[in-house]
Length: 200
Image (cartoon, rainbow, N blue to C red; front, side, top):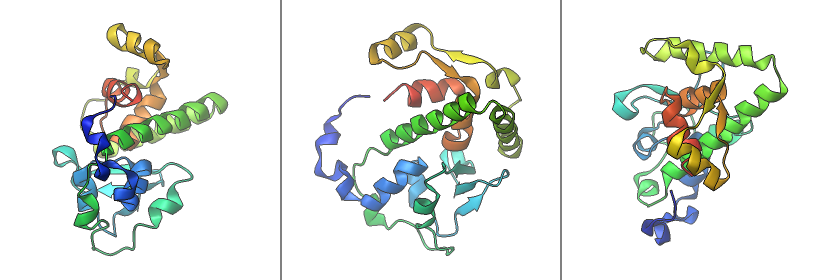
């Protein structure tokens, strides 16, 4: 989204709150959600993956942020099983661009899923079943199979922007939905692509 005036502030750098910055880089929550995290909010989801539990996310919704392979040790180090807050209030009083870190995490997650789907054809069926399991566990919106099949193609302004930025104009729908469901809790491919995969 480009450089903003707030980015020049001293309290917008990683050094302002290194614990929060490093955690946000691999979890991808919103500021208010970090503020409510407790030491017992490290859980496993319906498919057995390590997740950070968000008891009350945007719109009051329960969600589970899946952790990518390689990030489990770092994330686990923040949780002690207690009901104490993970982050002190002072760690959250800054201008860190947490939405940017959320978008960077979304892009990294997309690359992880897309690469596995490309290299391991048998992984497609597994990932689809995992997405469906999460959908059934937490989403009340009607099932729509087309959101998981084929290629998501950018059109019009988004396509022009992607070309200008040297970004892809086509995305694997299943990989996009995995990012949307497991890491953003948006449940929508269009929001995931436009606001996260393409925006930064």
